[in-house]
Image 1 (tube, rainbow, N blue to C red):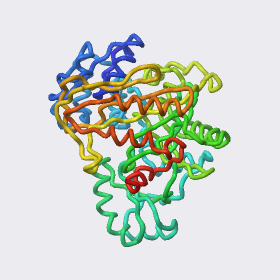
Image 2: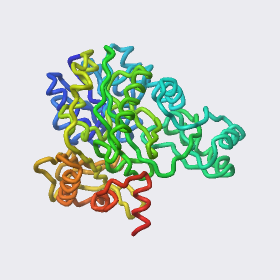
Image 3: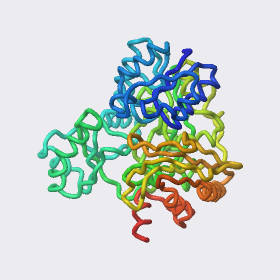
Length: 445
């Protein structure tokens, strides 16, 4: 592995370019036509255009990415997160062309991408899973399983991920009405219309475990993360370690994550996600890629997860055991998005002007924004990830509040003020978290 095609954009593309440089690897950036002046393109020593603004014809086009590898001589491909990062088809095409895919093998991606099969596999390894149904193909079958499981339920896309393709169902009538629409949405979003039912947990915590697995049988975890503060199943605030977990529960979660990774034959960097309800927890899914929130784990461990990805893809062993992974302090990440919370989180686009960005001890900003850039309407609204690290959670929280106050841009609307409200809220400060946190916040105002 000598030359890596960075098959993504924005801040994750910058992270991969930097990690390649640190590993002594050449790297190639790709871009769509309106992003010729993007920061990841300007920072790369080599860049190639892969198509128009439409992601389906650029960042989501496997032929375009393979052509970019061919013309640049890239012998590896890093997919970042989002787009094709969990595409078994892309990994398979890379394999067929002798290109190293920086991620799990195709068969593991297919297994992890099928929530039903993944649940069955980890359940056989003794990892707790939520009661659920197999794939339901008709309204009659769906109602039959719903009656066995009991309402309310989640109707989920079997091939979904990232919080998409999930609906809460409270009655047989609602289930029958939602089924065809949900199937079509799943087909359009994921190329697979398969749906299944799962017991709904009303106010759980969303806790995940960062795992790393090499091709030599080595598997370690980098502790827990809490991703409970969400809107419509999309994460806004993440932190590590997950606060307020009793040590025995934390140990059980971490052990279950490693067992799940082994059961799935996982190779690479990934995340095992759980719902936590009191002293109980349940496996949800595997994110078979680098996560948006990975910097909070990096802060605790003091290692670069993107470099770890490159080393594992190169065939290197991890080189350390679980007892050598030391976690220090507490870290929080806030996602600053170009969106308007007052208008239903409607995405905002326009020319961006930076007035002030945060910095200082224990403050990190991962971003690809620059003065006068055009925020485009075609892609994810993420502008920046603000990460703070401190000896205690309270130190990291206060540091985050100060950092967000200093994050000032104009030209587009952002969710910064909402993030400030969350970080300052007494329930957040005390760690009283559940996935309906933002709904409770909205009701209180």
